[in-house]
Structure formats: C-alpha cells, structure tokens
Image (tube, rainbow, N blue to C red; front, top):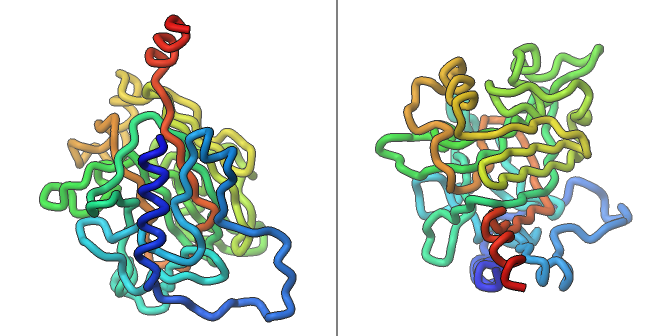
Length: 277
C-alpha cells in the first residue's frame, strides 16, 4: 500500500488552493491535539491520510472534476458551509468523493476507514461507501453506495433533525437498512469518532466505540433487506463489492477531520501468505 499513500501525499501537496474560513474559536484557544496527522507506524501499517487539514485536493464533487466552493477548511476540518441553499443541498456544494492521481474515484474492496464528524443543530449528512460512479445512470452517489448516517438526533429538550424520528434514519444507522443502538451518537456540535470496516463482504460500523452495524453484505438476507428499503428503486444499490468513498451534502453544516483509510487483505490472501511462511 505504499503507492496509494504516496498518492495521497502528492495530491495534498499539489492542490492547496482550497477556500479557508477564519477559525471559529479565539486565538487564545489552546490546541490540545494536532489533528489530521499520520505517524510513521501508521504508514508502515498501511494507513493513508485522506485530509491534512490544509488542502482539499484529495476530493472532488461526485460526477465532476473539482470540489465545490462551499466545501472549505475551518479549524483544521473539512467543512460544508451550507449557508447558501440549493433545494435540499448547498449551492457550490454537492457530495464529494475521494479521488486518485488522475481524478478517477479511488475504489476500495476490503478496507478500514475511520475519522471524526461533527454536525450542526438539526443537521443531516452521511458517509457513503462502495460507490459506483456512473452519473448517467445514478445522478447521486447514494443510489449505489451504502450510507453511515450523520445526523443530529436531538435530545429530550431539543428537536434534532426530522429524520431522527424515523427508524433506521438516525446517526450511526446503515441508512434505511439497519438501526444503531440508542445513545451511540453525541450531541450536535460535538465530535463523533467513526469506523467503517468491510472485509470479505462483512460490514462493521462503529460510532464512538459502539458497534452500530455488524452484518454480512451481498447475500440473500442483504438482498431482502435492500428490497424492503427505499433503495429497491435503484438496481445498483448495494451490489458493488468494490467502490468509492464520499461525504454527503444534505444542505446542512457539517465538519469532518482525521480521515484515514487502510486497504485490507482478503481472508484468502492472508491464509495464502500464512501458508507460504
């Protein structure tokens, strides 16, 4: 995995013209942790840094060649400034995908993807993966990719996003397919840690240390669950065993940081390597 790691570094180094917003906190704020960094040990272990807190060059709009101007850097986070609405999305926004050297979407089959997200009050976003980019057939990446829901669930005293009242539409859910346990998500405006692991067609979603989804993909049960969901309208949804990663523009302010991904070997490949040792 050294080649993809160098690719991520090269893209970050050559595309640093991203819009930057002034820090939301005062200059006196104490920075307790350096975000968006990667250690030598992580690189050796196969991890790559997707976003360094300074450049947006590793991302572009789904179906386009550049990233929208509404995606900016704020406080070392990749932030969607949703102040200028365009129907249910953002003017100058759009879903953004992780890209390769040549601008093609980076695809992963077996992978471990992790990072942090923060959502505004009553906000909605999503982390979408196993995407097949075909804008003629699928204008939106969620028509093929699976989504870990990013949402303000609200509290007893705050309303939250309307989707919080819908089963399988809450933060940490595999959107419209599997519901997360109650209480896994933090409050709006607080950082949440997430992990998404796909290994030989088995999916694990983790939110703040809580396993929210643990299931097999692409089997008969999976196909039945998709058929019972809103995604039955799109023949390609949840059928691609290898695909891209996206961050969703749902017309609300959202922040992402410390995004890292690692390609994993299949169980068969690991067994073959073990047999050769």
